[in-house]
Length: 488
Image (cartoon, rainbow, N blue to C red; front, side):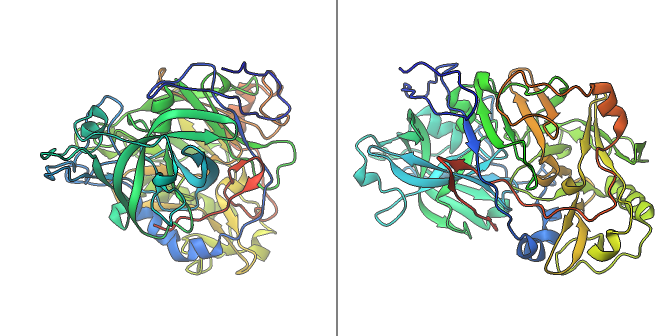
């Protein structure tokens, strides 16, 4: 097994040979997400913006759960007996927006496919078939997961009929409008020069929904079959650089490489939900506008584990942020009051609070910050919560309301520019701004602004100009650009 280089100028890939279901700590790949490209989000917002509020898991008492097995090995609802190896039906919440995508190889010899990164689901899957991106017949290392295997029964409980050796599954996203049905198998995955053997994956034989050319999804949730769990890493992190960034890159890191890049990190607890065990919940305590706490009723963001309702979870497949209505109303009112301009119809983008870009350029847009339990404050840039569309000339708040009790989602746009570190064993989210830091991933780089100063600032940018055009980061392996929107 090759030794890992300590060069930091570029993220690199090191050869790793792993036993099935096993990973060697400290021998994990580091990826960068390279050249940025400006992408027009107008069509997405127009077609899907107003639908985002319906994507939060709600009424979990009767909500179809899924997304694979939970982190504690308990299967989620929807398995059921299928007889003769028929697959259980699993559902992952709210995977429907602009996706972060990377290209990788699967099989021996490797066949190139593309996977969309998703921290709110577990299954790693790709389309399979004679004309699909991955043809199992051409691989010498593919193997079935038996129906009686624990991996099968935990993920998709089913009755194994006489002579039925295969593990069938159906995995649904965002209410089931998009889904993949196929067989679980094991295969070698190749990321650049890094080979990982024995990865349990879904061989998607029937894939329904608009996946916009993406071969499949790489689930990074808390379930046993997510890539994070199969690598057996105790932490991972990602950073999506703003489009106008010069000194910072986008990247994703695993294991020992997922460490702070500056000296001013903040942290908050990661919470878990029995009803939605794949999701990463955080304890949001409040929101600040221009440094002042909003009057949000106590308990608005509470996760109610009895029925799985409420709570705030993180997503990188939902562009916009969705807040409980009790939090959204005072937020909208405070932002509109500070701007002091007449709002305009934002139906062209499917967003709620909009202005003309020309008028907003002459106004002062208030700063905003998220306040977490324990006092950690995530200060937001203007581009994290306002979107400027060059075609319509609209500038809109990229935050929407959800129904009472449905919970809240911190979407990908609000995370841009922040290095998000998931300490899984420590049940902690560590975060830091890389806006003023040197280009990552070199460790030891320091930004001399203190945490206290950051917490008191209440937002880094006091805007007198419209926000920049915001677009999702794009994963790049060997500088191959893969751009996709997933409209599920």
